[in-house]
Length: 384
Ligand SMILES: Cc1cc2nc3c(=O)[nH]c(=O)nc-3n(C[C@H](O)[C@H](O)[C@H](O)COP(=O)(O)O)c2cc1C
Ligand code: SF4
Image (cartoon, rainbow, N blue to C red; front, side):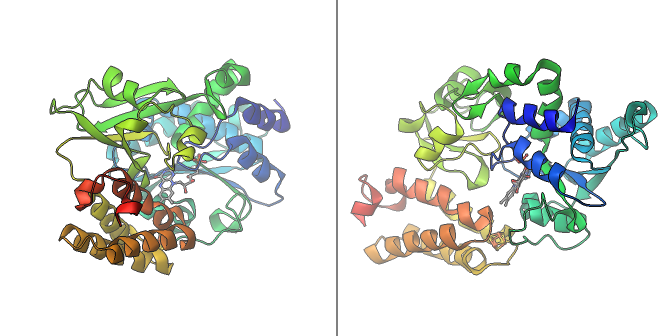
């Protein structure tokens, strides 16, 4: 196939990045293909630092050729001859399996100076990350891959134009790249047929936390949280009523039961300030304390912040302190307003989604579970 046709088919399939931001994969590839450079790269983001997520790991451990093939197709399409899979060191089995699979693919002629006897060269290597959460952010990942400390780069320029070693780079999540071979085996229309709205295809939902049957289930977009919790997850492991579900990883919102019938779709979730993210669900029962979880969100951000920008670096520590004061009994208007204003500043002033989204779990906890903060069970803003 001609590269332009490949890109158009990928756009037509509706595939959006599965790492969290849901950017159309075909548009990213088109940008890199059109860029003029002596070297281009394909980078696979296999950092998978999100709590409760493991779909990338399962693909790499159980069917690494899906990913390898997707990366080769990406390389041939955009004119990149080198690829890297950036895997966190906490995934030793995935790293070993990938290395063996890459060797076999090379022996079989899929990798090397001439991919399957064609004029296209493509080489692939595994790079081990040390496990900093922020190194999953694409620009911090590129810094880390270059051997530097994982600090977020300001955008623009986007990595598609100035990426690894300053060269045009496709950086995609494992699931995004591993989906590509299926799209080309069965056709863009086949893939597009699954899903709803602008969320086409399937997502491997990962069910974790307090759940009877934790695990992964690949389903078309449009399924509801209630179906995932009860039909696939079998309810809570504790047998107590489920109370809150964090969707979209540690930076995702806590959804109360009143929101469990919203179809899992990027746009439908965005309407209520929630995110689908990498498809991770962490279920909590009625013994959970959402104020404690909100405080932990700020604590996590303080631990994992790369430190480049003030709202995230300082705001996360101040946020943890303010929530601690509220939990200690100071539920005054002043404290609640301070927390809301701090969250507003982090959302609008942070350089990347680490600081920009940490307020999501915090504010959803405050809005939907005010009683855990010692506030009356009315909308928190009015209570304040
Ligand atoms: C703090 C932070 C952590 C992230 N961690 C990951 C990760 O572990 N894996 C991933 O694929 N994307 C992660 N992302 C999203 C990436 O920045 C980027 O959007 C993604 O690699 C693009 O690939 P995609 O378009 O295929 O999703 C993270 C973003 C942020 C802000
Ligand atoms: S938001 Fe946090 S992680 Fe992102 S650039 Fe700023 S300090 Fe770094």
